[in-house]
Length: 120
Image 1 (cartoon, rainbow, N blue to C red):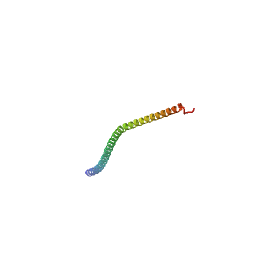
Image 2 (image 1 turned 45 degrees about the vertical axis):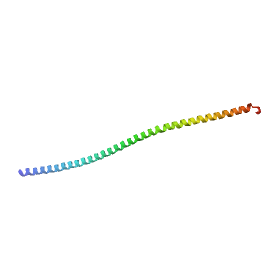
Image 3 (image 1 turned 45 degrees about the horizontal axis):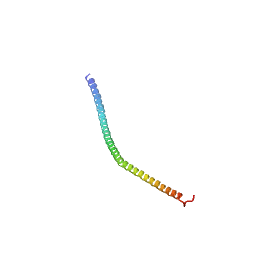
Image 4 (image 1 turned 90 degrees about the vertical axis):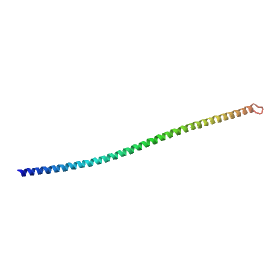
């Protein structure tokens, strides 16, 4: 009968409307989830860029420090070598001076021993 057919159609219509509402709700939920993921991705990208910039800065600082250290070592090593050479030369002079002094004392002793005033 037409009334039964109409009732069936209304029932199917209600089911379709319910299904459409549920599908729209799922789509809205997925869109919201997608927006949250996009925001999280943007945050991760921002953190990555900040970390990358920080790393670049630290690498540049390390290169600068290495350059300064190399320059300093090029300046200080020659000074240290000169200082060491000077100390070595001073030690040689002092050793020669002591040797000459010792020799002069031995000559004086030899002279005293060979003189007639020395009683063996």
